[in-house]
Amino acid sequence: MPITVNDRTHDLPDDPRVSLLDFLRGHLGLTGTKKGCDHGQCGACTVLVNGMRINSCLSLAALHDGDAVTTIEGIGTPEDPSALQQAFVEHDGFQCGYCTPGQICSATAMMDEIANGWPSDASAELTGEIKPTPEEIRERMSGNLCRCGAYSNIVQAILATQEAQS
Amino acid sequence: MKPFDLQRADSLTHASQLCSERNAKPIGGGANLVDLLKLEVERPDRLVDINRLPIAGIERMDDGGLRIGALASNTAVAVDDDVRSQWPVLSRAILAGATQQLRNRATTGGNLCQRTRCYYFTNIDQPCNKRAPGSGCGAIDGVARLHAVLGTSDQCIATYPGDMAVALSALDAQVEIASANDRHRTVPVREFHRLPGDTPWKDNVLEQGEVITAVTLPKPVSGRQIYRKVRERSSYAFALVSVAAIIDMADGLITRADLAFGGLAHKPWHDPRIAEALIGKSPHEALFDKAADILLEDAQGYGENDFKIPLALRTLKAVLAEATGVQL
Ligand SMILES: Cc1cc2nc3c(=O)[nH]c(=O)nc-3n(C[C@H](O)[C@H](O)[C@H](O)COP(=O)(O)OP(=O)(O)OC[C@H]3O[C@@H](n4cnc5c(N)ncnc54)[C@H](O)[C@@H]3O)c2cc1C
Ligand code: SF4
Ligand code: FES
Ligand code: FES
Image 1 (cartoon, chains in turn yellow, orange):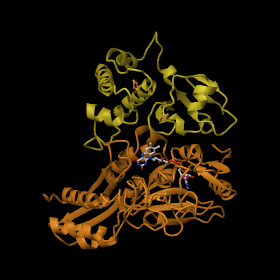
Image 2: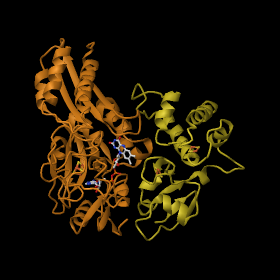
Image 3: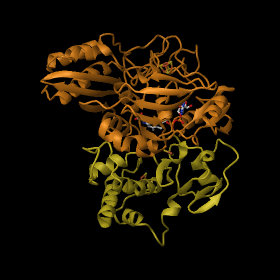
Image 4: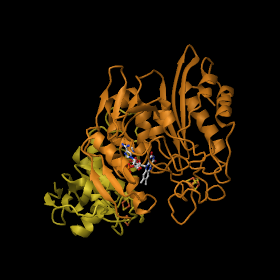
């Protein structure tokens, strides 16, 4: 079975060593997804697989046949950004921008996780509605490092998007 | 990365067969294995993709327990309604580990079998008896901040790094294992991981060709359930010390004290003498000190990790105090 990336289908590479990240960037030319550490330690490579965020650097592309992947290119375009992308611009949620595609993919899935009522390590209770407090957002976004330290503006951008949607 | 051949298993028997041949390994999410393949710490000839096997479900058992398929993701387990309400220490331990992205990919079987984060183990230019038997242990006289203080040997002082298994140990969960000749066996989580001894390359009791199929939890018990993890930063870091606890009280006396510890040893640490010392007593600080004495009586630091001994004492006391409502 082929893999679907941003609604287009592709054949998977023959070499089983190719990571999903290298497949997206090198084979498909979708260079929006970034390689920071290549070891699961920074989150720059975050993409959505069947709606769930994962680190594409630690996943073999060959295991993803039949899966639907969304990268930053599938989330919005400069002409038609998603609400979250727009909020990152308005709140200065980046400086160099290297971590930003990962941050936005991650935050896009995070908003669904909060809507589903999935708890985090920062949640006082494991059940019940989750309030998207800055503390919750920081914990839920801890898998996305930002060397420029744009963290407080990233939290603001996410909070603003959450508020606009609720 | 060394070339390998990737095979997809289409049944459990097929998976164990594929895994028992040559230098083969199963791959779950790959969140640990792919990292180690890149570092050439792991150099298998074959990887067996087990992800399409029908062992991802989470279901209640007739005896009131829970059966968690080996492919259930860390996220699926942590957010499962039964786990959250009946076995909350398991949700808490999983949520305290890694990040949402990693937990989405990590499987229950892979998380149990994750390898140590010892810096010498992951650097192929360094000596390490676990990775290269007989080459020596770089950590014993080296950088040992993350390392063990209990159950070490002169061959290896590595820690088991995971969180989920610490909660599973406190809950006395069982690991279900399949092998190529359809010989299935069940091993208590408390006996699944090993101490390093003279064979530090063996992390756990799995033999070549064996595949974990499920983890089962005994029926829920009453009491407070707590997972307390102490780490270098408050998120996205492995435990220095962690405590999983299920503590129950009746008429002012402790009636249950199931405790397990992470970050201290080559396995989640469980010492039945601690529960014996606590049960039937009314909680107070001197009793907690006694429990910590039992835990740490044979503890040995290696310089950089000496701090873990007082840290474990304080973390245990804090957890016991929180669970029993005692002011320290
Ligand atoms: C940056 C980073 C931080 C992390 N922080 C934490 C943390 O704080 N706490 C924590 O607990 N974990 C942490 N992890 C570890 C992570 O949770 C594990 O990498 C993950 O759980 C492994 O699961 P997997 O399914 O991806 O396993 P894989 O990587 O696929 O496999 C791991 C090992 O298990 C074996 N295996 C897999 N499935 C089976 C099976 N069914 N039967 C037998 N053997 C099997 C494989 O052969 C391999 O040896 C972290 C990881 C990273 C990269
Ligand atoms: S502690 Fe164990 S894993 Fe680390 S270098 Fe020594 S032998 Fe290797
Ligand atoms: S590039 Fe994948 S986590 Fe850093
Ligand atoms: S904006 Fe530069 S790394 Fe985040």
